[in-house]
Image 1: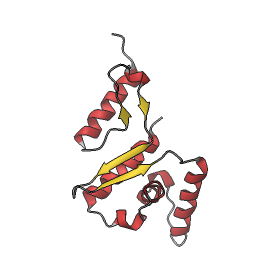
Image 2 (image 1 turned 90 degrees about the horizontal axis):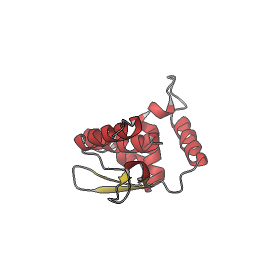
Image 3 (image 1 turned 90 degrees about the vertical axis):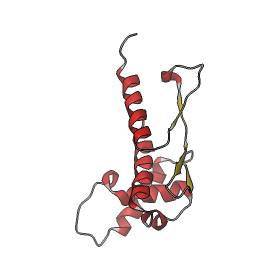
Length: 129
């Protein structure tokens, strides 16, 4: 079998996600190749308490992302520091709010491990091709 960088990269991402206890964002069908697998737009994240949050990215558009960035700027307007939105945890919590209907402050109140799990899942989902 010929080496395919994209396939190997996907395998590595899945292994890392599994090791971190994160959910899979890929539907795998026995009758398709890995390249034919489709990304889904619904993300379920279960935290340590057993509670599951559902994040629906089906209707996220460029405007949605811009609205989240605008909200982030409003929340940080008194801050003198410069941050890149896509590297800011609050950006991901605001995106979590937009896609789940759960207020971002609830995510901020989660235990650190659960907070990081939600943040990582949102970040990984948004960074996928």
